[in-house]
Length: 478
Image 1 (cartoon, helix red, strand yellow):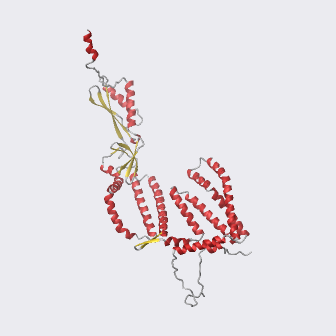
Image 2 (image 1 turned 60 degrees about the horizontal axis):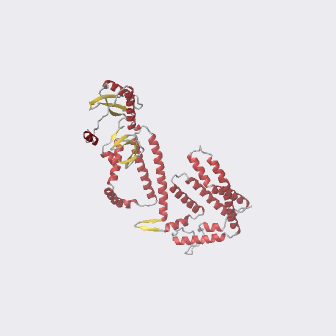
């Protein structure tokens, strides 16, 4: 049986009408010959909208024809069947998915996405075999509407699955919606009409024409380029951080320069791709730069200070620093600030300018060795030689105190009620804290003094209450 090309109402209303010039076509001048191709004028948006409305009207009327109505009914029936099957299958699949606790996070999220799109998945699985069967059993035109619906459903499902890999919820929603609109327009063959309508709404600013279509193109191209720049930056930064031959400060500097170059190139190329003339923005950008120079002096100062810090390697991630009352280790070097995490979990964001102009104690600048001092006193009746030996032994017994740099103890003076000593010891892990190691050494001293009978004097005072009424009344009773 010979096949017949589809020539339905859908074809005539959706597909754009094309007129081909034949070699024997009669031209407007009345001569017969080859038609000369001429550039067609761009239709106005209102004309395109009216043409689309006419096509929609014809299409709705065409749905009343028997085979078109049959195809719509079949699609509605398949949608109802998909809803019933998904309602029965979804709880079983959800229970099976809950038992996969050992799955990786990405696989579990993919499984949850399939559970949410269960109705669409079942509908796609039902409609495509129906289309294939109808193509073999009857004329292709009698399954044309179903094939259009099947293509739309499959495209929407693929876009929903691919968009799930975008982490940001807002960006994922925008990309998913834009993808659905784009594939729908392409499958319905409405590209020219859509572009004509979007390009018709425009404003003219000097020599530049800005339309909705240009804005959409700019957003799409810039979004794709920025996404590519972000992906390249993250992958390159991961490799740079794994390179142990590069110092931590140089790693941060290279990553910052790479981000600046890639994102700047993405914006520049994206604007040029949509036809934006950047030379006209030179004067405006210069004026804005002068204004920002006066208004953002501190911001620029912090940016320059951050570059200086990265170049001179005065501080780097992991260093332990003290700045005023803040003591902690550097977690991150930013473009404007340095993140310092203290022992109590607080994270201070210190401007880069403060680290350049202020006095900073870097406990691990050239090396991680730190010497700590402890002051204490003992009674005059205790042997100072024994006190020194006991103190050195007690400090050496603490875990974090270095043995190859042994502790030392010296007499520093004779006080009013005690002999004063200083105990010095070394550690090589200041990130572990200083207060806790001092506390452990003090506790070891206390235990050692108790074992050896060494006493720690403390002031003892006798308080006498003058003009006591009881003492005044005693002579009168006698």
